[in-house]
Image (cartoon, rainbow, N blue to C red; front, side):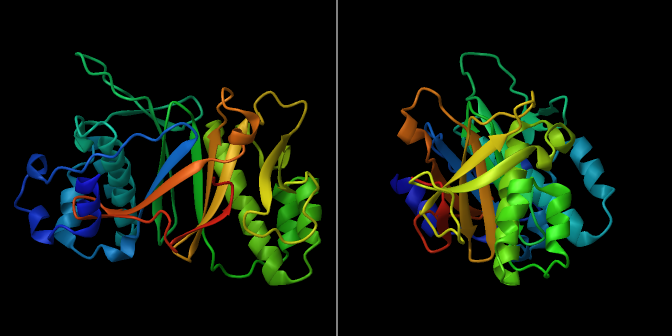
Length: 321
């Protein structure tokens, strides 16, 4: 624990990751303890805080040949930078949970038949790698990676400050369930209506990504996100933090959608919403299944990690124990 806290508090100097070093001699990543049951870990990067071109080049060397080729095909330096950081965040984050036995560069991935990336573990020898599950989300100003063990996870992050959407209810009619449209229509104030729209959208994205079936396999209109008071009465006004549970209803005739999921919704750094969706542990008592645990780190891999949990940078909106 002391080693972990020292790493959190003392950033490494940039010259430790200068270009003349080969990737194999980069500083070791500090290992992270595996998430426990009902727990998700979230790591995020703020791309604008990386200004060192040589560090970005070092990051690029961690990518697979296919990933490098994909990055080169992207037009625009800002988009290329975000693509590199997204892949590096996944690789370095997963490496931490192997006690750094697996170099970030050596991870291999496969996609399920719906296109969701998964870790392709290389079993062999006496050491058995943990069954890591991950999901990634990004905006132009933040990239986040969620990790669990054994259970599927989906995450989504969205910028809170977005241009007002004209005809918001028309957009909701196109993508949301009738219940959700009615819920949004109950807000007369345009700002509050847009805020609630963003909450719903972020949660629905996280659910679809957790299912891993793609948007064609889980259309937004085929399931409903509800905010429910602890008394089991539907929240009639804008829900406040920790006063409601996030519930999901699925169409009775749907074979692809299930309701055995739990959600958390948090505010990150005052600028983003983050939704986390993970499968419920059916072995846990009913009341314990309703809330999940979340630990959050802000990172610049090989340079600085900072634990943001229990700080003002992570505000629980709903779903956390």
